[in-house]
Length: 449
Image (tube, rainbow, N blue to C red; front, side, top):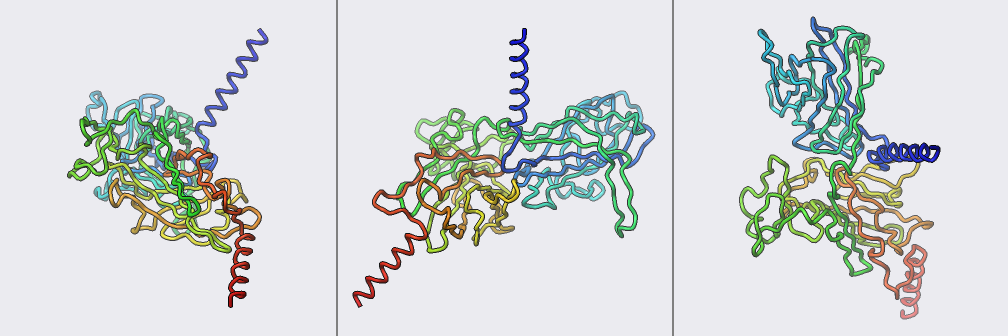
């Protein structure tokens, strides 16, 4: 019996540990989406609430077609009206003889409105098609909100029953939401900051992201190259899974909506090839890695006090472009970034003084849009870093990043033993050796003269 109790305890600890670890991002340990309900007023049969979704993730946004928020009512509540959003289904409202509610479903699903809706349907921070920016990239765009009028509900703080079973699609799977929790009421300041009011009641829901829940395979891969070695290390074969794709456009190929086509085939040039499908099915260019995104890191130049790396991001998905994309890299020399060309750069400090992680993203209206697969489906930049005599080296793959994330998903790295290596005949490249070589060359020139 004692052994059975111990085994059950171990199983419980493992279950709790695994469930927490799945939704934990070591490069953004506090990142989450917090959904806050503020009751603004009571109505004869319920309340009016402002619902705000705050994205506190540093580098993970919600792209088009946007978020879908769902929950289950605790009783028999209905939604009389919504401003700034809409329920996807009305449900059975046949028992209502007079005014018909906006939604009578016990498990409503709500989506954001599209840009350009009439002003009387808008509210602050709404109507962006469900797109929410990453907080680290665009704090002003990391909020989405709508106002909902709830009926057949409680009309006091003691009789209101909190919704439960919250779900968030962003736009696909990946988010897990906790239970609603009552918190201190939100405080509002007047425009002149001379008076403050507060919500009648406030509760919050926290949703965290797990890449393992979002996709069975990685969604991006990384390749390497360097100036000191002619070898190009490609993405690993089938890095993003090969079984779900069928080739199209080749000899004997059969069409398949989730397949791949050769980049030089006629199908890749036909009109409509870039039109997204309602089910979100991908159409990839046929590659050995079969990833929608490839990130290439090239060690380009070596100077006396600096070194330069080139970063190129290529899109192999014909049906997807990436607006306000983000790229996160982890490298020990990112603590000495001198200049970044063509990209924006922001250091990320998830652990205080450890400055080895940074976020790259495009310049607005220049390269913040990564186009679909094809001749324009790539963005690239270079980063100049100052050397640290204590740590800098080109040996053992030190010049390559430890981790790469694209749009918040970790990319598949090449195996460590395949990294470009220094030629055996070349001495170890360090700042001191560069100075020594330069001095020797100068001495030879003087002797010749």
